[in-house]
Image 1 (tube, one colour):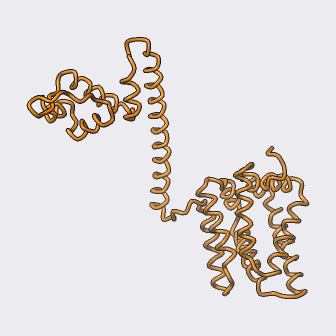
Image 2 (image 1 turned 120 degrees about the vertical axis):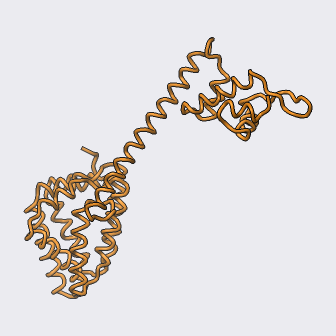
Image 3 (image 1 turned 90 degrees about the horizontal axis):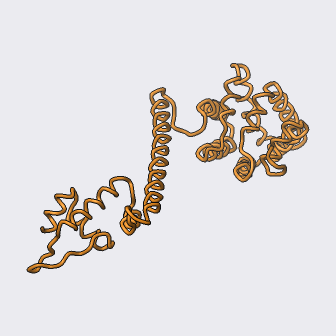
Length: 282
């Protein structure tokens, strides 16, 4: 039979048949009157190639199976190949299911009028509220933009814990507003100089610490929710980009003083050191 007839019977194409010839999967038949003449054995092998490929095997795996004798001493090897292929199919199915779940989440967000940023939606709303306040008061938003970019990058890597959303969900209207005001005051520090700037920075750090203590349980959970080990050190290094975005001396004084206050608390100190890689993971 000619190649077109055989490929039609096997449910494939002449081009695929020629590809199998090049790979050594299908023997090249003898030539009769200038044309290749395929026999029943060629058709049977071609159909087996298609059956194995449709079952999920790559052409490399198909070649391995065909090189073995499924009825003889190589039966265990054939089974191993098939079971390994089955495992690959299951893993792909799980990946697709996870992708489907993520797509469903994105659909739900869009249908609910939310954005598609990977960070928790409550955090998106908080950043939006801070940005609006900074614009309203004519304050520099460079530090906020840097923080949002870093957090978005971490979220895309799966390194932002859900506990951040839990912390924000606990805030009532007054506490939400207090948090927005703290960010605005941090931006305002950039404009201050001298002793007044230092005093304002220290006072704001104390106020931020008091704010943290009012929400100690969820704030501590938010810190502790970040990963340890190499991902934690990556997170810690990226947070330094936020610090670098603040250029005012008073802003750096505020950040250093607030970190000092965090480290005076044994529980916060443990999770911060773990995040920074200074202590083994608990």
